[in-house]
Amino acid sequence: MASKTAPRLFSEGPIERGGEKSLSPEQTHYLAHVLRLSPKDKVLIFNGVDGEWIAELKQGKGAFKVMPIEQTRPQTVAQDLIYAFAPLKHARMDYVVQKAVEMGASVLQPVLTARTVVNKVNVERAGANAIEAAEQCGILSVPAVLPPKKLKAILQEWGGSRLLIFCDESAEVSSPLSILHALSRGTPAAVLIGPEGGFTDEERHLIASKPFAHAISLGPRIMRADTAGVAALALYNAVLGDWR
Image 1 (cartoon, rainbow, N blue to C red):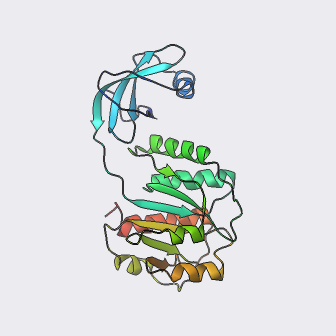
Image 2 (cartoon, rainbow, N blue to C red; image 1 turned 180 degrees about the horizontal axis):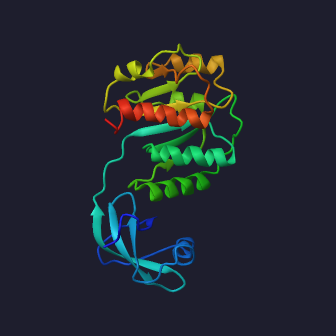
Image 3 (tube, helix red, strand yellow; image 1 turned 30 degrees about the vertical axis):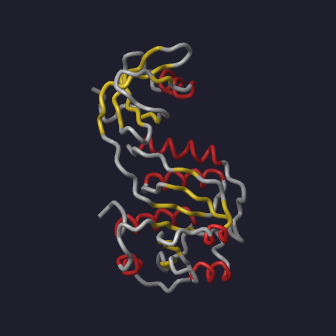
């Protein structure tokens, strides 16, 4: 049996007992040269559909293969939570993606605003960061990373039943918990975090005019955008999400 500390790998495609799956050269390099694993050693694999499985390493042609042996955890349904955020630069963008995955976001939506500093997003890099976070944190589902989209377009296309929890630095400083407690549990939701310079007045009024939007304050201190995201997701999970 593999221990809880066994390496976890995301592996696309169906997982079936006894069916071999090829690993990528990058995964093979990590297992063989970083972790010093060998054929017959055990790892944990998941694909976001079939739960988590113990698998045995097999030597393939130029790369390891894995043979699933036994399911360790059945697949669970991820909470329906979109994390919408203005993209940041380099390492801070990596941090935002990783923390959003750890905090239970099921979709990551970069949002382009008037004051967004970064207008281009490396979706492939963000997806790789999302997978790495899921692997390291025992998460069974990997969030989708969507291409960036302008704020106005997102609001125009918004599904009427989904709540939008809008973190507004200019909102009256009061307990965000009381606002969140007034919302309906179990309703699909999104958390929206603005750029480092904040939303413009026009953007703020546009968001606030939508019936599905609910503004909250994150307190009397101005937070960096990456910190604000973690704080907002923690509040959501504590009141409406899967920490209840």
